[in-house]
Image 1 (cartoon, rainbow, N blue to C red):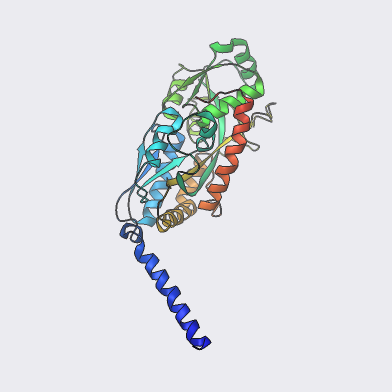
Image 2 (cartoon, rainbow, N blue to C red):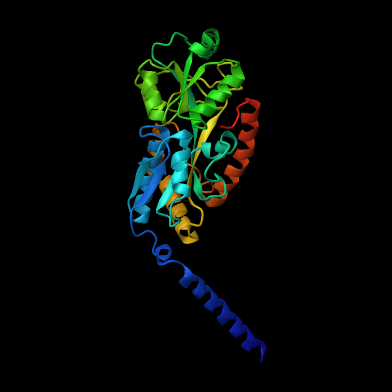
Length: 331
């Protein structure tokens, strides 16, 4: 047998193997998507995650040619909705939008019914949102220093809202507590929407939330704002100082959001979802809407499975140390 003949046979074998692998894929993976996709948000409607999901999901639908509907499955700091996706059929038709809580849940819960890192296919990073410390409109303190002093004086009589253990607001509260030594009472809610409503209504004293939610309410005078918890000011609220500018540099936290599918979802489906996410995050209307809500879309390099996988792995380690230092015991 000549070398040329051997080469031709080897090439033919490779082509046959590739075709066989393609044929082995489920038909649903090859023609994905051919029906409605559900994007699960594990928090209440009206919160930051819900807003992000509806903006991004709408834009992704245009690329995929199928509608993405948002389903709010709330409770237990986002773990109920996350579990719903973990056990869903791995076909790409049920996906999850979850924030940094995907990383912190590893350290906050003793017996999760799923593995936050390994039970999901990563689709891509969506955004990284600054957080804002806000209070009810009639709260007496005028600035961040005054807020901290007032909360220290009131002790556990000061009420701090959060949307469940491991939620972005809960994590911000832990950072606030660690940085200031204040000991407010943490009041859990099922989502950011109900929490912020009770702050506006005067039932809760203060709150720290991804800027997506409070920005328009601050602009409308419905919330009192004290500081943004990142290194730079927000374009939408240029007069709002950073925590560092207000004299508390240790209060620094933001919350990132990622898109996931159940483990075992076929790669062609994950790739199509990632591609649609990348297109959505470049859409001028999405960029503009994100800007109005004090956040920026992830870059094209960040909106990938590899980037989200690397970020999640690093954040699990980072927050494990923070949670341990805070003395918080897993539930």
